[in-house]
Amino acid sequence: MSRNTPIVHKTRTQVVVEVLREKILSGDIAAGEPLRQSALAEELNVSRIPVREALLQLEAEGLVKFEAHKGATATELSVEQVKELFELRALIETDLLAKAIPNLQDEDLIQAEKVLEQLESAFKQEDAVGSWAELNTQFHTCLYKPANRPHTLEVVHGLNTNCDRYIRLQLLLAGGIPQAEQDHRDLLTLCRQRQTDKAVALLRQHILHAAEAIRTLVAEQVK
Image 1 (cartoon, rainbow, N blue to C red):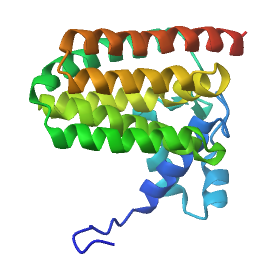
Image 2 (cartoon, rainbow, N blue to C red):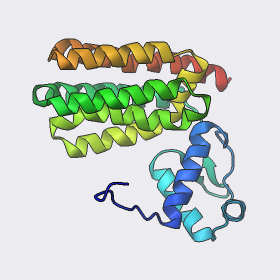
Image 3 (cartoon, helix red, strand yellow):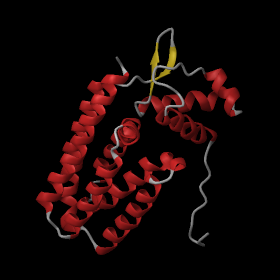
């Protein structure tokens, strides 16, 4: 470990959030499944307080829903939600990229390349599905951060969290990995060449093409 590497101390709530988020995104907790606080507390060997706090945070992320007389459940898959989330992403992320490209430095592109190599490696490992979303977000963040729009970037990260389980559906069930890999490589090349218009057009197509495949999958799942 580097002498400058910070030691991250996680609260019980943070740990519970990460465990439950992964279970929901991976499908271990199915959409619509009740999330009973006492059972979760026993399973995770914590009190009900961090479970309650974690469920509230996951509600803010759009992964959990609270209903009167029913309690918390994992949110249902929704064609309408896919349309809204991915259209928002296409609007916001393309604007971020257009603002970022003129400010991209060599170190930004080098870091993006490193993360992309890690993502491509993770795509080939069956036990690395849980890392796909984080690496994908890191790759895009490398390209967006030079826009110097931290609040917009935070919104994008929130949208990505809500999109994560849908993206996994597309990659796992719709054979989306080869196209994703090609799009990422082409996007990085266009950013290196400072071809802003082409990069923005590719990013919009990348997001909306995924959305179309996911909407078809979700429509089949909720029949």
